[in-house]
Image (cartoon, rainbow, N blue to C red; front, top):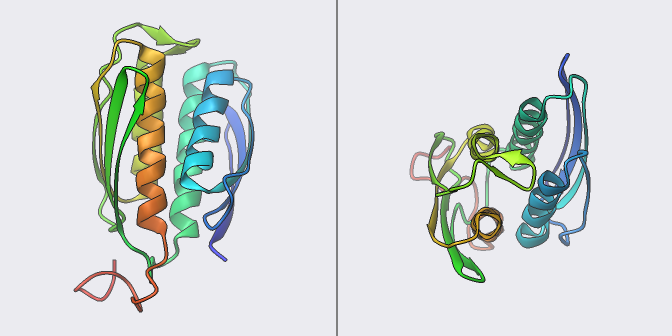
Length: 193
C-alpha cells in the first residue's frame, strides 16, 4: 500500500496529512481557507488519492499556511511513491474548465524541475493572493521531487485558470503513479530514479 502520513509544525503553522495513492479520491481537507481546501480536494479527487489534511495558522499569515500545506502535501506524495518501482512514471493531461484550458506533463523521475505558467491576472483569487497561489504550485511540485510542466493555455476567469491547472496536474499524476503490470523495478535505464 502506497501511503504516507506527514506532519509539519513551525512557529507559523501546523499541518498534518495522510495520503493514499491507491485510493478512491476521498478527501477530508480543513485549512481554514476555502479555496485552498478546494484545490487540495480537487487534486485528491482527480488523482484518485485519498487525502486527509488538517492545517492551521499560528500567525494568521495566509502565505505561510499556503506554503506549508503545499510543502507537506508534496513531500507526503513523494514519500508514498517510495523508490517508484513499477510505476508508469510519465503522465500528461489537458483539462478544461469552461473557457479555461490547462496542460500538465509529469515525469516522476527524482530530478526536481518544474515550469509553471498560470497566467493569473487579478491580484487575488478567492481570498488568496496571486503570488501565494503560484507559490502553492511551486512548493507542491518542488517537494514532490519530480519534473513537471504545468501551463494554463488560456482562459478568462482566474478561478477557472487555477482550477483547471490543479485538475490537469491531478489527472497527469494519476497516470504517472499508476502501476505498470509489466514493469519490475524503477522505470529507468539507470536502474534507479
